[in-house]
Amino acid sequence: MTGPPPGHGVPLAEAVWTWARVAALSFGGPAGQIAVMHRIIVEEKRWLSEARFLHALNYCMLLPGPEAQQLATYIGWLMHRTKGGLIAGALFVLPGFVAIMALSWLYALYGNVGAVAALFFGLKAAVLAIVLDAVRRIGGRTLKNAALQALAATAFVAIFFFGLPFPVIVLTAGLIGWLASRAGARAFAAAGHGPASPGGEEEVVTLLGDEIPAHARAGLRSTLPVSTILLLLWLAPVVLLLALLGPDHVYSEIGLFFSQMAVVTFGGAYAVLAYVAQEAVGGFGWLQPGEMLDGLGMAETTPGPLIMVTQFVGFMGASRQAAGLDPMLAGTLGGMLTTWVTFVPCFLWIFLGAPFAERIRANRAVSAALTAISASIVGVILNLALWFALHSLFGATQAVAWGPVAFDLPVPGSLNLPALVLTAAACLAIFRFRVGALWTLLGCGLAGIAWAAARGAI
Image (tube, rainbow, N blue to C red; front, side):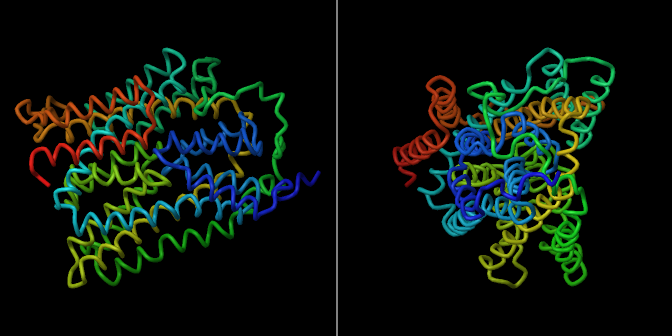
């Protein structure tokens, strides 16, 4: 059996248009992006079944990097082989790259101007509410029983109070799920992430069907050449920068740091951002906590992966350490370098691992490991939400340490009351009245400007 033909009857031009449409509508972070992809690819186009979509998503959640972009690459590869994966993944990134670069220029040039500062003050409140909503939505889809809930709680305690690295938490969760399944426990049976299928998936005829495509059965033979090229495209610029500029130059630091991030940051965009914020703010000093929130506000209001905020981080870090270059040119190069070393590995992980992932779709132990990992990610995202709350609602924090336990507490007198009121209003809009992320961001941005105008700050 040779398997269905590439594209399964879908012309490549139609696939390009479909992925461009998915990218243009992909606002609001991973939860919203995956929902858009599910609606178009599963419900409207019926390229994949619900079960196959969720298996691909669970696999992408296991990988370091943004799961929505990798999911698009995975599905594009399933439908049109290497060419399809490259097109789907690149189109998913392109709109956000252009938008964040333009906003980074605006921020660097006019960020201290009253109206711009007031806009980002409002956006921070909406961003915190959106991240809290992500905890609720992903947790609601993932934490189906007490064992999964306990795993999420343990992950939160491990990262917030003990500072354990993300990879250790995620891989430990996967091992727990795998061992539990091998022992016969059903607590980690696949719990899924996406929207529920409107009908039984057995009743839905999909273009891809349930077969393993011929190029997936070929294994690494079909993807090793492009994987080798991607590895060289990723690492060669970093090695060249280190050799020419030395390890202490800002471009070398950006290339090396975000390359390391591409390897060790598991669990999708929200988990990645906690790591980036910790290192970019506390380690390299490229920007301040409030500026990190501003960058996240940019990413939330533009299409494409939420992890595009790293482009803003690289832009600001390079522009402030221009070393003889024009600051805006230095920032532009820093943003481009950040994007390159962040996303080239994302393609590499998919092309290396997708053939293997297709072969293990029916493996219950592996599915249980992926489900356990997804549960632990809820705790990681909750940690991110708390980090944002500390730095957006309070002007100062104090470190607390008891033996191996170490965490930050807010200084009560530094509470920003207007920020608290606006955040509460954003939470009410999202949780009580089901207002969408974009409308909440717009409303909070306008509220921030109105508050600044009322104080005479504009």
